[in-house]
Image 1 (cartoon, rainbow, N blue to C red):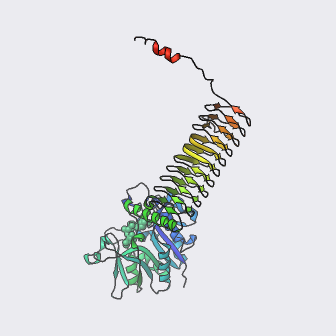
Image 2: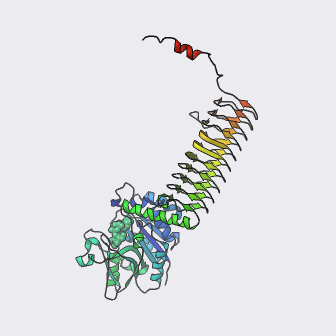
Image 3: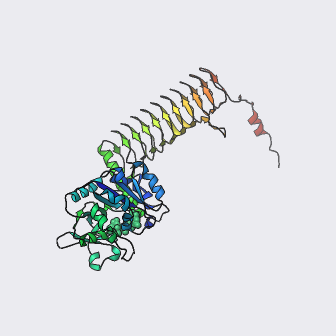
Length: 465
Ligand code: UD1
Ligand code: CA
């Protein structure tokens, strides 16, 4: 028998209980949208051209978010229930045959292992389908799994449609199914919206297949709360916490020290080397790689960046889309805004902002500076208060500073401008013309001293007003 797997992920609903203008599956947990998580899980059991996402509310946006993964889409214009969402895909789905795995796009924690176990269970069984069930203390709101005397699943009864005895059952339908595709499509038209919600319930397929003489198995999962769909923002935060804890634990077991781990946020794709220390409330996000023996200071945010080994990031520092070479120090209170390259051993200190700037090896910009669109050589000292004037209101211009240059405090470098190797710029200068190598540039008014001026002023009686 054909056991190739196709997956259908239902993601057309708005998710009313989120109380949001965004469709539920576009909300994020663990740094990714819910739909990305559920599509990733699908790709662990099926090839991309056999993964289908049913989209409706904000379907274009949902499609955009996962399109790069090569999966396919089914459009459900009107949400008439979970059964309807699958039925409308018949034309593309039915010819695929094999096994049909169905679950909901709002369960981001769905583990690949559970999907694989479910498919294996179905492959080795004569049943028409297998569903994942779980035992709950409080089953309110979920579909209840009704079993027959032999222990087979007889039906799933929704909360709104259940009798008192049925609602007392604590085994619930998690919402992950694996059906034999041929039998599913043969009987799917028998789903009727004959329930209080007037919806086409996917769960009715259980009873329908039973009536046609087939059996349905249940696969009881552990850690069931992780499998469940998210309905509101409280559950969203709980899922986020699970992702965060999981990642932090992984990091700690691989040799990273995480201080007050419950306060630290690290995205899934982040790589961090051994003996690096992450201080409380740090956030390390996106596509970031951090080498060994680094320190990421408290409350710092590092995003889409690459830090080599031995880099020290002081507290309250923001590093975005930048590269920092070995043993450099950035922060406290620095901002690497975008596309910067910090050389080995360089220092960027407090209240220093860099944008599209290369700071050479062992160069220092220790206090209060803005360096934008600049190339700064090795060993340069940038004095406190130095500003590159890279924008004249129309265009952005470059500042080039050669090796070993000393830029005195409070210099204003009006770009485009170039300062040659080994030159000096006097403190307080406004530099509008390029400076040759090894020169001293002074660009400030000469100081005037008026002897006894202050004393004479004090001695003169103040004029009456
Ligand atoms: C569903 C199950 C219930 C199970 C529970 C587990 C049904 C009828 N009930 O209930 O047995 O215990 O999940 O969480 O299936 N969707 C569409 N198109 C539609 C309707 C829904 O794409 O027309 C999508 C929604 O976007 C959502 C998912 O299907 O992501 C589940 O729908 P929802 O209405 O939340 O079902 P539950 O009431 O949670
Ligand atoms: Ca739900």
